[in-house]
Amino acid sequence: MTPTRIVVWLLVAAMLATASFAAEPLRVGMELSYPPFETTDPQGRPAGVSVKLAEALGAHLGRQVVIENIAFDGLIPALKAGNVDCVISSMTATPERARSIAFSEPYVKTGLALLIAEASPVSSAADLDIPGRVVAVKQGTTGQQWAVASLTKAQLLVLDTEAAAVLEVLQGRADAFIYDSMSVFKNHRRHPRQTRAALAPFREESWAVGLRQGNDELRRQVNDFLESFRADGGFEKLGDEFLAEQKRYFREHAIPFYF
Image (cartoon, rainbow, N blue to C red):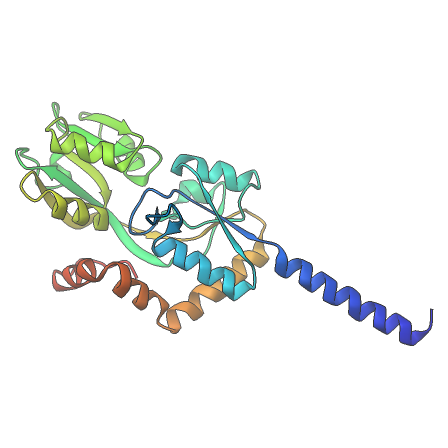
């Protein structure tokens, strides 16, 4: 093979490799049951803040995005098994989770708050660990982890969905539901007569993109994307589009806001 043909072959091979990489989809795991972050539109298509974020990440990487709808407590197993490339699902970066997966830099600041039944004597997290108290949590969340570690006297109700936990509070079977402050705000606004909201986080947290350990290149790319997306005002735009009321209320009351 002549030198010219070798050069041509190498160029063609490089182009094919680049095209193959660009065509490789980015499989993003999330649970589509947490509006306005992870949900579906009237046609059943993935929608919400995290979907927009995933699509922007895919555009940054030059890769088509495929959303995999997976129950929240199945997201980490799916990631570790290689069924998804990353997780963007309002996932809190915790030391426990970081022992089995890697995380990007944080992109959201939040914390645990309480949705409280109107008739309950509870006013803060300090009132939870008392005999006779009933506390609802969602399976696999940091609210459940905190409750298991911190509440030894209260009864815990571990539910599969946010809606089921909220229903326990509405019907008076639970004194409070431990969840993130934005969701507590949303559910209190939906049921203002039946609930109260303790929105100031009693435990501050941050969300990040979940990645497989050892996938350092993708982690670097995700961190580069998050930095540029924030600098370009991407998070502010998402907040204005999906969370305008919450954003305004939280800032007025000095409650840490997401972005």
